[in-house]
Image (cartoon, rainbow, N blue to C red; front, top):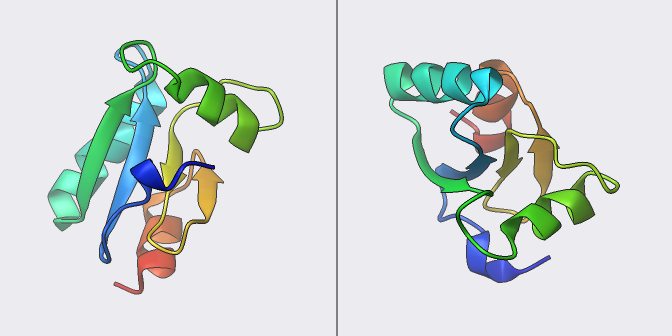
Length: 87
């Protein structure tokens, strides 16, 4: 996995698409709780769809989230994100 997308401590990188309802829901919850995130549209940024596929066993499942420790989660709940960030 490329370190280019690993976020700073206390934030996440979220790979998404504009049409993804699960992505919109997670963004809304992150905004409400003040968790910082960088959103990357896999249909707009070259190479990121392939990165998501490599994380998800060949599937382009979004949202796929990267954490500061380099780990990833697919379609995590807000609680999962909070626990992984320690907030």
